[in-house]
Image (cartoon, rainbow, N blue to C red; front, side, top):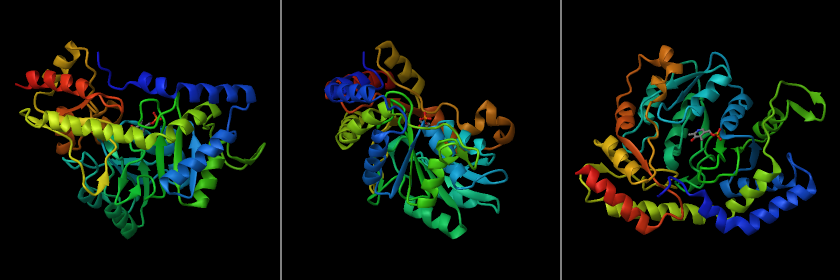
Length: 365
Ligand SMILES: *Cc1c(COP(=O)(O)O)cnc(C)c1O
């Protein structure tokens, strides 16, 4: 059996450090927004090269709070990708704004910037790019476009901790960069967690108020806020993993190179495109194949994990079909029929990769 992600292998390695830190949290009896959350926020900001990082309860909340903190709301349009997890568009709906879906680039699977430009109207307030599968969007180009039209950039970095573009970290280009620490993300905790990175002290302050019931001072509430905080147990886990994240991402990149090598002479497989201007961190290793469904069956029969991210683009989801179902986004629709993500985690071994590729080779023949 080869799983999609192997969190057990990672925990085995971290166990002494994490168990000790968790015991200290339990002894301290300080569980919410304590010293470890504060330290993690500082360490995260330093890593990302931003002035402020505000932790919250999930990646979905990070997106929601970032939109709320930047004042996006009813009547506003936010341009985003239909080829992502539903949370990207949900957050836009939470603040009463309208998601506008545009087609993706067939190589990177990220937003097609020409389509973004064509979709701008007088109601557009923001663009929400997703650095899908751990590969950064061309942020300098998107930023130029956004600046020319006075638009905010709210980055969905849920899959891209450590990914860079022209040397800059994802999440450091826009008004806000939103991270998820869901356990299977490349930087993940052991529950739910999230974080917003921002260069703006005003946005950071607003985020801190919003995540804690709209209060700056205890029991004084000047806006309607939320309960969206990171807890100390998740913070100590994240601090331990943040110290190792570059090693983890290097392990993913090594595994991706091994897949590329092993798959290069398998007919009918398009291996992931890697943009030379950035550093891909392979949150997922996602290939394209016309016989995707046969490969899925073959892998399942051998108890090898695999997954289709994402089988139904957002404009075709039941919840959005009424409003967006008329859209034709051919690249997204084609990619969603042919994409397949293979097991990916830093500890994935060359022998495991060889086995996976053997099964794919037979199924693809
Ligand atoms: C996981 C994910 C989210 C949501 O993060 P949660 O922490 O699960 O709320 C948002 N966007 C993308 C692209 C994701 O992959």
